[in-house]
Image: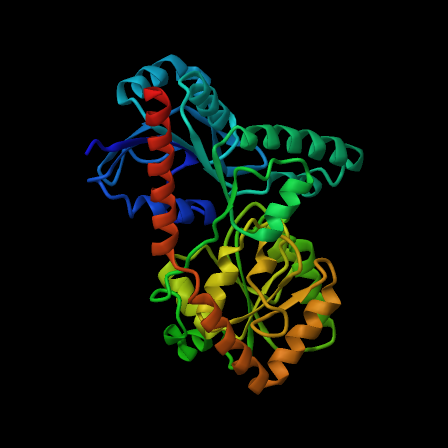
Length: 390
């Protein structure tokens, strides 16, 4: 049987770079080479991914976040098109509606190829954070970005969205519901597990045996770090005795360190180290409302850590309030602080909710999600072949 050929466009194809990359590589590491042939196009990545070739375009760093690079396909567009035509793809996967994504979409339209995408990043929610000093621009920029984004995703045959609430929000902004498919995220329950708990590791890190509040994510303002800092200051002002550990790095790290002087900043950690930290901490806090899913919330739950999160964004669909975690008004620092106190002062409740969190996390299976994805690639490729024969 002829292999299905998929060309996969993504800005960054580096394992464990961020939540989107981790999702992507859960799929790429499960490619059945007897059924599929992949070609990758990216701005940052290796020359080969597993056994498949990777074309790298020129790219530039993003001023607001130099860690991220934006691919500029126009500089080598003709060369890329020649390589794509030689590959003869059946399906186009586009990770992001970026310059590279729009180049890929134009190529797919010109060659009458079906497009599949995963909704990784809720870009319109970022506008309010990066233009807070120019509030009069927030609405027009958000509206414009939403229009561009909706037009892009409406041109896809399938768009994977990780939560029902996010899907409803996108449809409410004008995105077509016809090609949206709810496709959550998985969790490796052998990596993230209560079995990784190591009280001595935490004691060595904090130099005490106090309960530990953990935040793990990129340190960028769209993660609602203003509220995180406010919660820290609320508990610190009242003299509530606990540790704060912040895992991750980013452009806001220096500001966070200055405004949270008693917190322990451990920087970016690999998953093996992070899994021990999750399992050993007492409470997980995550006030972000810009998530499409919230991988870190699921990771904490699988590790037996009770999450206290914002009642907003894709993360809220993971947590059943009062059962396996708590959901708070996104910007209400006092509510987060209240829930932290409740959990740290009631060990029986915390253990009960932790058990529920672990149980809930087991329903998120990467093997099943990958099967759905590859079956959909097969369906899209088959539909093109049938249409051509007609």
